[in-house]
Image (cartoon, rainbow over all chains, first blue to last red; front, top):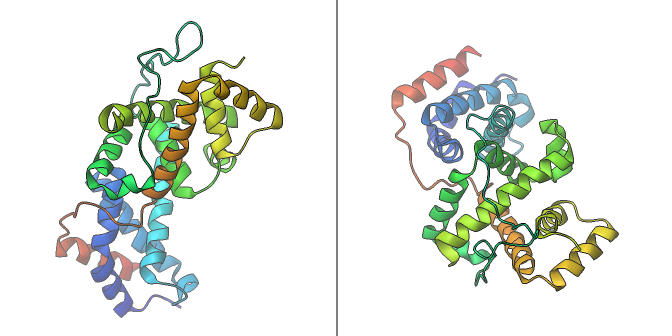
Length: 182
Length: 82
């Protein structure tokens, strides 16, 4: 069954704002965000039969959008737009943590996410990651899949994948320590 | 003895898919003697929890884009054309 016209009007009116806000938050590119939201609505039309009131419209539209966002991160991973700078030396010649890079004690738990200031710092640190590394992290956590699944989609070896995640987490951890947990 | 570089890599693998028995033992032996990596492990596990909650989010964004009615009309028109 084709999507009824009144549903088209209702969905666009009700959900465009929220979809655009989310896409922009993930992609930080307004034009790209709006493009993906348009494509989301087109896909929703094409797949309307599979929806047919089975679930919540917003949930369904968001899941379509998130797939497109993940596709974008996959593309970004494969052709990163920035140079991969040589990352800082965390470990010394003795293969141990350098004194100035060694993790300090954090006093924190998951509830730190309730603090809007912390969220800004976390987003800032994510933003400082090389595009390829940030894309890998986004894909992992948006998909909710484990490394092996993510690798298959990225067409890389698990060894390669964990190397990326490793460098990304090292940098992210350090950034958060410097900007928050110290 | 594992290097801290290797140990922290194993931490990431452990968090993601788990480790083989020999890897688990190697990591445990290393962290027992390395407070840097002990802290790293705890912090990376926390980061995993944080990212797991924050990156998928609940579809809520902190900022609102201005959406024109022209943009919405364009979407509606394209959808009707499908």
